[in-house]
Image (tube, rainbow over all chains, first blue to last red; front, side, top):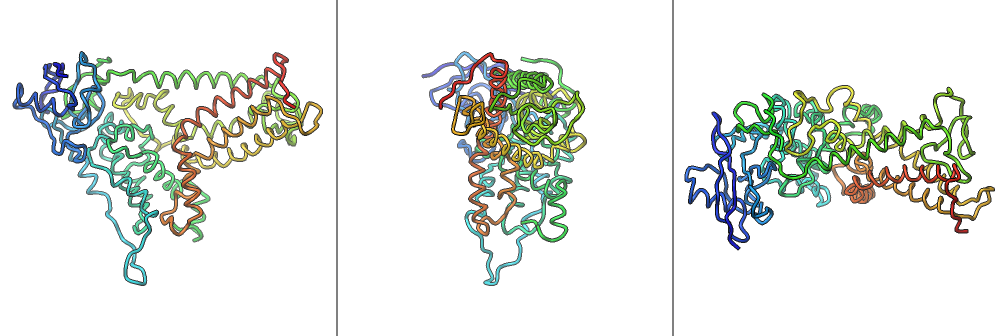
Length: 251
Length: 267
């Protein structure tokens, strides 16, 4: 069924801008990105929006819809009442470039600063061996499409710009967890997770998990396990003592 | 919708899209933190009153979980060795409640709940918090959240005692075994919920196997980790249900101790 939807779309750039009202046709089964494209095609040819796959796999069309960080391509117009005004803004944690497009280079800088995979020595037969059960945890984190919605919603940087210097954000703390849990990785990442990438800033309020379009349990499966590993390394006197006398190496 | 001017940092930081509203959410995001505050404040008031009441916590063969293990010489009943005489203003409950209080206060789930609802950090996802600075759990006192695993272990010891209390409930008021009443069922249910809450804990998940990188080399611990991981998925549910369970168990025993209700005996 076709109807006319009321949209409020943020238009502007780093110098300024505001919400503008539009009325756009909506057909059954369409998602917000379809409506943004129709708006672009019919009324606002200069509207800037970043998109690519339209299938929730590229992580390009991240924005905020009615104040909630979401992918434009995975948000159905059918989720809203036909009389409801749907407000669409760019992600509010990153500098805006124009309209719905933000500069997410903060994330790439953090990604580049994380020490890469350091494989341990190969086995006697000259190959690395590991079992499926050893990498299942890390594989969940590999589902990340780097839409950066978790980074956008995380209040540590969303509400405190200064923290960007010292906090990597949930996506990249998850990357550190992925590597620290990897059976073949040879680097102890627990100390740097806390001291260089700001794991202690995370107060596990789970917004990252709530907005993840891939359904990754970022808090329960990556951040809290990483916090527990850091406790082993920095805050638990018994585990620390065990490691010191050589009975409990990092597994 | 809140339309107060944004702080100079945060979503109002230079370069970000200029939007005056603290948030643009249109749903009832405030309901969940409001319910959390209401329930937790109610529990704190009730448990504080009961902890200082120092009465109506024992009626043969039941003892309230707020007062168990009862370790001072002023204890009612005989469910645990009386170890010392404390100052009069400290009731037997005070010595014990510090442990479950510490366990719940440092619990990863409750941290989320009270950071959001009491400290508004953040009050809800994508709703700006009111604080101008933020250091998370990196400094005193919140850095002590990292001792959660010690409270977890203490909580396990308490669970053993409360399970023992439930077993004592299979006696009658004369100490004869082989009897059961509604109170026995309630004590058993309370102990079961506390075990579920404790064993679904994130620290428990780490200790039983989460710290291991090569599960294939530790198949038994991997099995434990899988079981605890499954329980961990319901940790929030167990956190709330066990909290209600403790309060309702105490309230039931208070009803019996004040003769407001008579315990139905099954056999």
